[in-house]
Length: 349
Length: 169
Image (cartoon, rainbow over all chains, first blue to last red):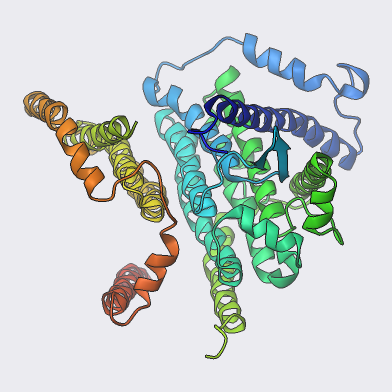
């Protein structure tokens, strides 16, 4: 199906995909905040939010309303234009990257096979890394525009940390591309559905990717840009109301994005063990539903890991973070690339 | 559509570049540079060079400019101010370039299209670029020389950084 053949159907299908993906992500983000509070409460032998709705289930709605109705304060000493721009830039990349993540097997709509990814780019993963590398600007801008010392320190830490770990993130997946020979995420998933999940073929890359993903999303144990014991709240110290909420949503959307990426690159995307692409196809559109549920299960399990780790492991020191990145993970990632290359030499050489 | 995309990205690159050169605040200049580099990446995309465009964003926008900002943010606020008199220069130059862009932008579009330009990538370029880099008859030698050059720069930077450390100790 292309735009020139059936423009209305094309626009409708793509619009539907965009709306579904963004809404799923935003709802998951809202409930991830509740999950975070609940899980942390259980881990610390507390009850957690339980006043709004049964079991605290309406808490995210109450939180959102609170953010909307709070006074929107812009402190007098800030650089106003950049101060307002920063939360938007922090949120935007984490939503854009979802465009290239395949979420389910293709569905058939009115006789057309529709791939369940918003934009099936040839350079999908490269596009994803390029856009997610922009997320650091939100943090840096916020730190600088706030014009006060703790945000600035947070911004400086964030820029160094995110640049360092972006490298490990990129290097860890190089092995996958060498083995699969494609940058298109859809192809990578399809190869895993009919083969073996990449986390078994590339276990070292998998571990490095997961560690780097924690650092990229500024989550504990690597949340140094907002380390509250040292920097009050880091780059978002001066922010309140909805502008603060945008940083918060941005963080959880980035968590969702990286969880989805782990699922796609290493855990077979929508694959269920012992189900081939023919089995999915034979189920018709229900195959897509089953695939989507399988995909979401992996993503949510990984988001739970984020929360679990946050409330289990204490924060690293800044020099420890840099040593781990440059002196441990980088050499391991490079050796991993070489080893993968040796295993994937062209036939006959 | 291609006309619009070309003019949009070309204006973004030009205006971003001008703003970078003439803005009195050095941090704003750095962010204008981001816009300019984005515009160039967009131009690559309109030409069908998808790999090059994504790499441009990944390395220049997401990497090098962040390092630049890192250095700028560590400088004092006074150093972050450049003489505002440069604004006087800016107005006529922006005017001239804007006029040039509007009049020639339309004329340039057919040339871009003749050079193989298309809206979005028509075919994947990643594999071709990779093969050209590893082809001894094509770009293998320049590619390897550049790799050695970068290695030399890396070693040099580390040596310079470590020297201060030894003096202090």
